[in-house]
Amino acid sequence: MNFWSVLAVLMYATSISAQPDYKDALSKCLLFFEAQRSGKLPLDQRITWRGDSALNDGTDAQVDLSGGYYDAGDNIKYTFPMAFTITMLSWGAIEYGVQYGTTSELQHLQDSIRWGTDYLLKAYSGPTQLWVQVGDAVADHHCWERPEDMDTPRTTTQVNETSPGTEVTAETAAALAAASIVFRVVDIAYSIKLLNASLALFNFSNNNQSSYTGECPFYCSYSGYYDELLWAASWLYKATLSSYYLEYLIEYKSLSTSISEFSWDMKLAGVQVLLSKFYFQGESSLLQYKQQADDFFCFVLPNSTLNKVHYTPGGLLYMRDGANTQYATGASFLSAVYADYLPTTNMQLTCGNTSFSKSDIFGFVSSQVFIHMASIGDILLKERKDPKCNFCGKEGYFSSRCYKKKTNPSKKNQSKGV
Image (cartoon, rainbow, N blue to C red; front, top):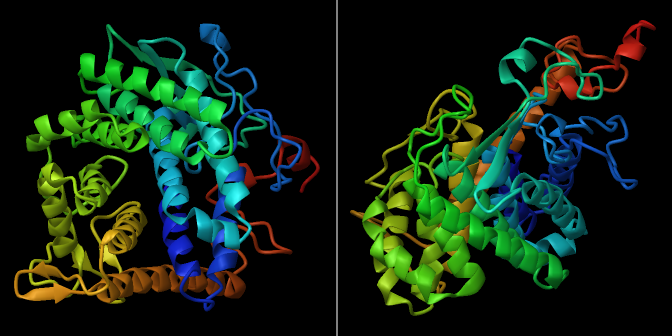
């Protein structure tokens, strides 16, 4: 689910501009997470065309795995990308909680995070056991039906001591640590529960290092698991300020390298930006991470002489085919956060023969947000011209090629010709 990245960047945009209506777009992004919910839906569910689904998930293994989020347009639950989504939603809440409050969306954001963490706590059913998938991906991809009606296998998969998967366990540890910070003020007991689970999961991850391939070919981690270990350690350092995690990050800093990508698979740029704040606050031992964060922005900013990425003719950052939005919005989010971290307004980012001010970096963020909004507008315009356009939500029309299974009519309504 890449909507976390759009959501995070829109939160920044809402704070600087009233046009386009970023506040409305922000609200709709949060509604997306309600549309993705699995399990028993709450009474305050705002997406009313969704119903309860997959209430018996986990029964094949005698464990309760109901809840959580479906992945993208499918009816599978993958812990790996779901955990990354929760990590990033939490980071957005930590950095921009005040702004979320001014838009009256903070509670909705916290609800979205908690829906995910409640599931992750269920999935972590033992000190060395994490459930990482519910559903048969191949069967699901061959069956186009709503989760409320699905009859495909709900098989479960776990990682454990004998069959570890460090990428997914470390990412889950990061998610729970980040979320523990979000709930520290509003629900301290829940925050402690999240943090304790994160601490245990990190130990499991660190002591049982092995790459996880069980979600291939859908979520193959090509970057390995070292970035997730550093990512989890970084969030645990932020959550606890424990010297253990600081020393871990210093000891294994050689695992961190300069990079031009930030995504569900590659977290190093996130590690580097997150730790830069501690460097700016006086933790000089984290200098390497700050320097590598500088490298990331020098690699992605369009006017940098050190630029290593491509841009579309319209100005959108382009990494590769398939879900390119995550790279553009991920870089935008990190840029907004890093610019906010810079300790003085006149501090410059130097990239070879080019220098960038905080204002320049924020300008890059604004440009990416505007392009995304314009792209959505183009889709809506096309939809108005062609009711059968592959886009959902046009009042008065039912798309015959809607991407989301969840928006399809129920089998009951289909039998009535709806």
